Length: 115
Image 1: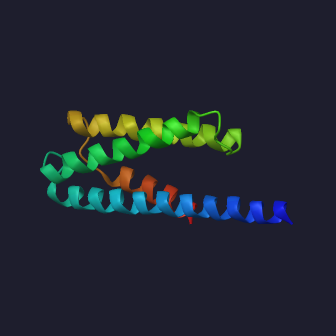
Image 2: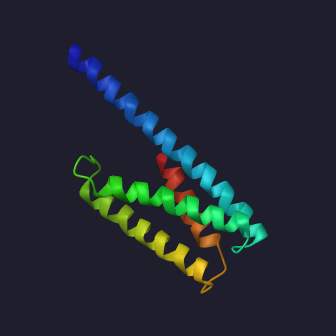
């Protein structure tokens, strides 16, 4: 009986965490879209890239943690995506690229996977 209740709490907590992560992605995706319209070098662009980097830094820290319960293969794939995102942010900031659509698309895919 107690184990059943505990499992429900753990499952609900996991759903709640995924919903929070999805909302964080929603927010940063909206910021990226605004930045794509106004430009990478605008205040909106700088802020969007900063927020995206912060979000992925938190995710990468969690994915590298020993307490992360995701399967190792999935964690490795998400870490690879996170590293690409960080590198793409730097390429945008340096002016090497100007198109934000790949960042928007990959983050939408990750967000959709949380739902």
